[in-house]
Amino acid sequence: RNKSIVSNFVAETNSKFESNNSVFVKNYIDYSLASLLWLSKKENNQKILNKYFINKPVLYSNIQYTDFFKEFFKDYFNSENTFRYEELIPAINSNESLEMLDNLLKRDSLLVTDARVREIVQMLLLSRNYHDRYVEKERVISKYLEIADKSEYPENRDIALNFITKLETLQSGTIAPDFALADIVDSIVSLGSLKGKFVLLNFINNNCKICEFHLQLIKDIRAQNDNSFEIITILAGNEIAGVYEFAKNNGFDWPILKTGKDILLLEKYNIRAFPSYILINPDGTLAYAHLPMPDENLELYLQRFIDRYNQSNNNN
Image: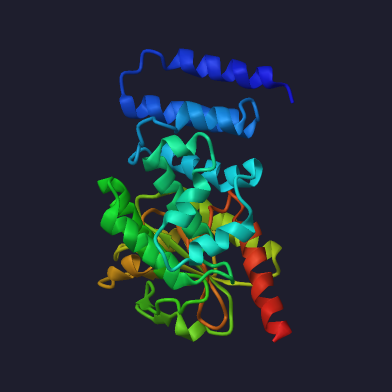
């Protein structure tokens, strides 16, 4: 409520880094502070949009820019009432071009002036509504293909193709890629052998100190949730001895497996960073891919998706 705290922090941060010469770092800080100003309601939606996005360079390779862009537009249309849900779904399902969806966004007095940003926002809206029960998925894919084929902006064409890959891969309810991997004594454990149980896959590597810290956290989360799910830790590579000893010394009682030659398993699960967490349903389908970290609401996500699956099966 005391917005002077935010103002002072922004001023101090800018002062601290004013001699920094890295463009990437400068932009990272600017959009980190923009996120703070927005979340604290120090600056409203329209001011943020105008100051940080409209007719500004699109920083495709700056993770703070892209993260803030996604979070901002996740909320923006709920607050601004640019269009109604009843108008959005027909625009997405239209068998015509993107014109209907584009016209909805053009109602915004700022978005109408920046075609590049507006096109990225279209893609976010398509992605966010892809699993809506009233949305025709093939129409969503066709609109991404239109952007990939006709966009004036090469980066946006690439993003459209990436969205298609993301939407069609590792989606909740699809069959999880199976595996059969060896542990420290070369006993084989497969995902299929754990059907009938919720399974939390934990991908790690040997050069990740935070991974060891997280092992204790997920042990505690499982205990606090009445052991409602199994854990499997999968180490990238073959050097499993150190992790195995650490796990043994700390009382971790679940399988520690090595990918060995099956390094493509990381591709199948789209593992880009360590640690990564994926929840598998008892029927072998994906509950949720790429969960947040144990110290960033992992437990809440696990509870939500376990409850959702159990309620669905009880209703059936």
